[in-house]
Amino acid sequence: MSSDFEAYEQDFGTITAEVTNKIGRIPKLSGEEKTQLVLNVDKQLEEVRELLEQMDLEAREIPIQSRAMYNSRLKSYKQEIEKLEKDFKRSRIAYSDEVRNDLLGDDASSSENQRAHLLDNTEKLERSSRRLEAGYQIAVETEQVGQEILSNLNSDREKIQRARERLRETDANLGKSSRILTGMLRRIIQNRVLVFILGAIILLTIILATYFNLRGH
Picture 1 (cartoon, one colour):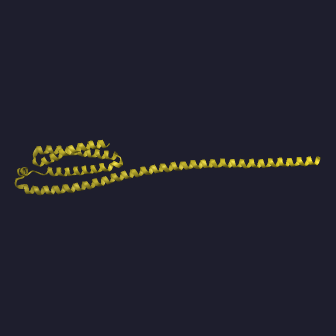
Picture 2 (cartoon, rainbow, N blue to C red; picture 1 turned 135 degrees about the horizontal axis):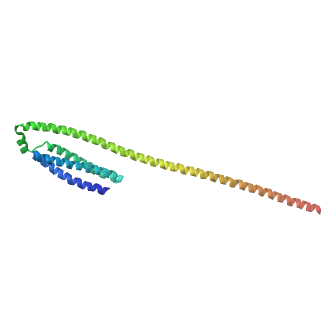
Picture 3 (cartoon, rainbow, N blue to C red; picture 1 turned 135 degrees about the vertical axis):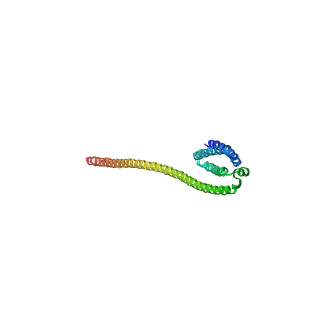
């Protein structure tokens, strides 16, 4: 699983490097050339988001003892893509000095105010988006913790059931052993009583035989 994660990391690094370079070129362009580059960057950013989703899925499959390291790397990549998206949005409404002067002339100051207003609104939307994403991440982590707790509870329940079954078997074996011992003790007592009676009969016989023998003489 970690090898797949690292492969996605390499793709992520390659694409983000290209995106960074293109974002820096966007303000210097205008017209159709700028539009095509913006569309190209937007497509690559979508590819990067898909890579992040794949890395997120891979990180969840990594053993718990190693997962924290990959989650930390994934978090830094998410922050990097957030910064790239912010720079991309700014670059789309930004112009180099030369292009701005050609397009706006005397209206450059008014355009700067509009641009500042747009940037402010964009940052507000990004903050809201980050809060929603953080909430979603907390919900996902809470769900994972809940699933682990349920799994542990199921495991504990199975252990308790197995222990109860062993106790029942032990009780049954003890009951059987007790009945066997009771039967053996009863037979021992019966045998001793029989031996005592037999001995008494033999002794009485000897006494009577001796008595009649002496009386005959």
